[in-house]
Length: 307
Image 1 (cartoon, rainbow, N blue to C red):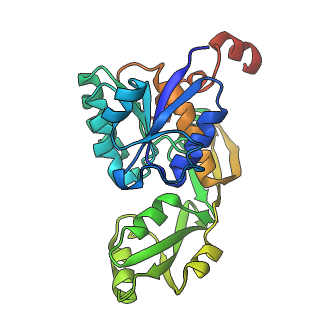
Image 2: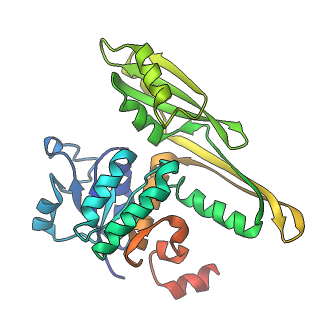
Image 3: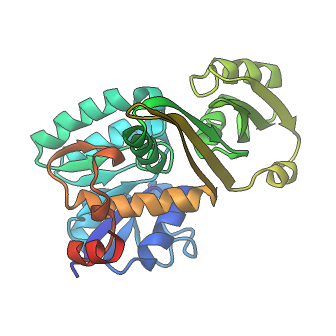
């Protein structure tokens, strides 16, 4: 079995879980973590003693060029981070989750990847990501119909990161609440910085693209302990499609799961890091990836076992 050499970009919630998944995989070697220079040498336990570096150049000088870099920063940093690595001929995977911007991002990264004979898989979490595959399969099974994707109740990492980026916010947690028909409300708990206006924070959250399209309830907490009491990693999805196969209607398709959000996102990223080393040049999403490429081992063994 060929060993895939991976580097992790960022050591937040996702980065820590990605390291966990990499160290459990039979075909990966984690070369190191790329992070801010001011953080170097810290969080040894979370890094599982994997070395950290201030730049990809320093990692390459010591460990050699990685086969793939797993981007674990916020979605809004993904476009530039991915371009940076792809322009150097290094493959990337990311869990970019701003649904309305994915198609445009794919087009832009596709150009950079092909110019540098490299490849990337973007939007490679569970939604967007594996849920996108289920939506595609559901539509293939019942081409005429409607699919509703109902998230939660659970903590959204992308929305929580976006809330923390608002001026005056010391910490925040965003809870996704399903209200039916694929629609969702957002409940955001905010710990404001000293001297910050909570009312202004509420206005800024309401105008942010992550929150402006959904019913929004913003609540203030006063202490880190109060924030810790409402912040957990549980999440889930209920996906339903009612449609027709040919002229036969009433085809009812359902997929559901209850999960630890960062753990599942990270596992999908690692599986996609495996797949991207087998893909041609360009930018891909999970609906472009043959499922067998996500699995460790040989194709024919999986065909014999799973088909």
